[in-house]
Length: 488
Image (cartoon, rainbow, N blue to C red; front, side, top):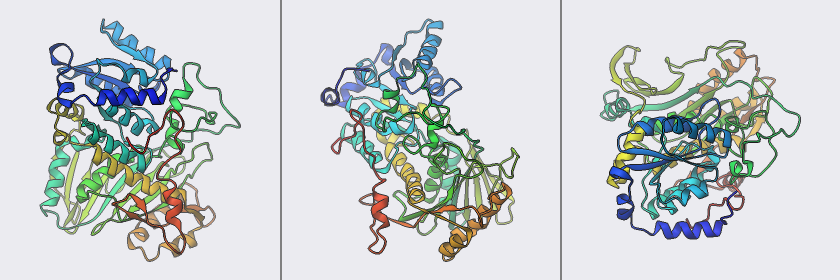
């Protein structure tokens, strides 16, 4: 652990950040290279951080000059790969030491979610541009603080929603906006991705000796490990992750909002879901419907972690989509998201293809903006990432303050909501095929929560006061010295 205190770090960071951006844009390595550090390398079985190392390593005019991870074994393994190529790279366990390195121009982070906003803010304060993986925040409040930091320190901050760089999707959504399929009726996002049980333990587990657990935990509460695996399974625990709606689903949530042309938070949101099919140490929903009630067309998001039926491996689909979006319009629909997609007429006949690559140029787009110093060059500016991430959080907050309800209660509560009713029967049928009977097993019925988009706070209902409970989940209690301040 570095001996640098939070106060000293912020003081030094602010001093660095006061250097004009024009100076930073000229401080480069040999041949004007952009010198990149990758923070958060994944795990022994893979990870997005390792993918970023490979991608940025291959970009012209870019050098990966530093790596950082709280797991020394993973860090040393990646450093060794550079050594085998006779390439120099610095290795850091503590990201605060990395941020003090003046030879680094930009950071790429693929840490667990609970570190995303804090590291973004620290990087901006240290005068460094940053590519931050999705979701850009662990909660709504800190996501807004990350946006504020990017603007205050004039940094280039790219969100890791790489499908914004997919030319096929860019073309498809312009095609829809021009009215070729008629008025949009509903935007549907899907994350039908098999998630098996993470197991159940009967007490605190031993930590990997290679991990600095205090650093790994960062702003979250420092508690004993109570699951079998430290890495990756943090996605399914509220203190560090956001479930699959905030993991894989953030990509499709972003595509739906993009297709709808919505630039702010939804006026209200609700969720129905639960963790079904097994009993384990996971906390987040593995089956969920979240409705973001935009006008004139809503956004409906579905998560399914169970297969199409018990003891099967094949996942359900909707109009052929398992992971992606279906934008339903008066005159047809668009289905895709993995890389481009197809437009269909009302009978389901293909009428136009939009070829895409899933956003393979997203990292190059970040480097382009780093060089130009133009936020407008980014395909996924931090503000876009913040809004889409916040939609995921809105759905999860409704879920977290919801009540356990049986099928009759759920039907009664939702009967007036046409869009929810339309999804409800498919939700029930899917669970029944996995031997979950909602007439006997309770699901979490989340309340409708009204959002004040300007304040990014929930409206407090005078009768039930649910907005007050919801607002308590807009922000977390930060652990010293890993604190996000009100004034970034």
